[in-house]
Image (cartoon, rainbow, N blue to C red):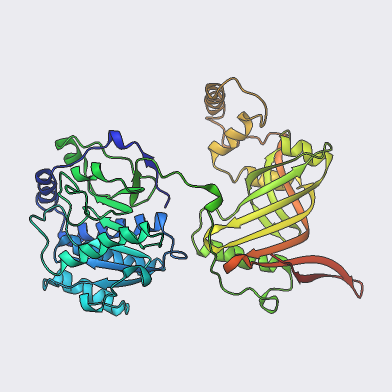
Length: 468
């Protein structure tokens, strides 16, 4: 669920009174219940954390929860983080006995999520935790924090000094309001919590303007148009089905420091299929079951007679004993290169599974009957688009394509069958080499290569392990 970046200057910020009125309206005339809003808020916090801090690197999470709704958001977030692959712990010193909160505690206990008392917390939180979720106080809090929350806030503040001493502290994620901050004026004394991430809920509060950490997200995707209009709220659009959206620009990152420490099941020679096509189907089925976006997307690399390679993403549309099939324009750049050099390489990358598959081989056109059958199985709009697009040629503007599409739409409006253009069809890559790659810790990745060899007059696949 990738978040989109929004301009911080165009976002609305709520006063404490406005934030309270919005909540009252949501839970009054608009029919929301507290537990509904809490569930959505906690999920937003968990997804925001997962956007930046992956469980492979930031696994141990301590959620410090206060007695009110903010604390409830933290309890819900802890549950979702557990299911996202993190190892959460909860410090909930002033438990609320209302059924809603008791139910949240029961849910966490059923997952064997440890609850730690204040006395059980280590003096130095940086040794035992990677993420600290500050869910103590929200926008309705007034006055000075009382025990034990005053000391808990001090623990979070003191982490700032570890960073100055060049010790890596855990990151702090504050839910809606950094605890101890003034809802509208922010960190008045300048000596409060310095969160690395702030997850504003419903709409950012005024204090969020004073937030200077690297990651500001908005969550709580439940604001109806009636509230947005009443308070003239300018809120960012949530991308796709995401429960969070980034506010402001992401921090500048040293590209050389970007890395992922892969954690995957072992991938051993004795576990794989003897036939690489069977192994491919097995992994492809795993990618489908993991609900990855477009698991049939593959990079297709070709080279013409000039020896200059080019790559692009295409979609796999069939795989069988004869090879891998895709469809395209026979007058495109890749088609011209394949006519000059009928060999290609395919690459599938399944990020969510830490896997990739490389396939190399010779390429030939599929039969016209096969191309015809697939062409007419496509949506009508895709058929018209294939006729309109003279792929890889220069066009004066997108308006030309849209006009030609409209003309074709009218031309074939009464026709049940749109004729396939002669310059459109499929290719089949006949595999001559496979490599199955799976990411592992410390860059000691698994690489199993399949190559054909003759044994007793029969073609069999030899499997070897390659150094990562």
